[in-house]
Length: 142
Ligand SMILES: [Zn+2]
Image 1 (cartoon, rainbow, N blue to C red):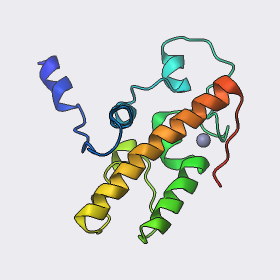
Image 2 (image 1 turned 30 degrees about the vertical axis):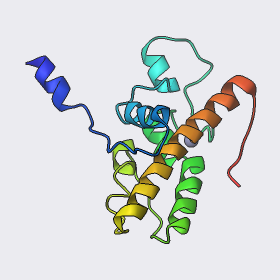
Image 3 (image 1 turned 180 degrees about the vertical axis):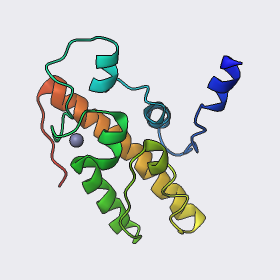
Image 4 (image 1 turned 90 degrees about the vertical axis):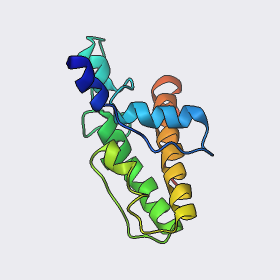
């Protein structure tokens, strides 16, 4: 029974064919909270100086925070909304973010482009977060 429930809870990501495989996998894992955020590491008793977001420092670093309502992510989503000429969007869950393009009202080809760019952006945010932590780089959205 437990196994059936686990399978039912696995998120079916709308895979984006033109996006690198690693980016799709990353988005899928982020949605399931299976990436090594500070909160996730803390749950595994890995010692850290603090559990706050590596970008803004004002919220606990969770997948939902980094990719949806962190200031860094929100600046990127605003820019994407401007590119696609859709209303600015926000989400509080990674799952909602990954469904934004579907609900955008854009034609199918543009929906697919927007979805792919959101997936790639999540990868970029994670990469920037890791570079900031491990290499001391501090990229601000331009
Ligand atoms: Zn943040």
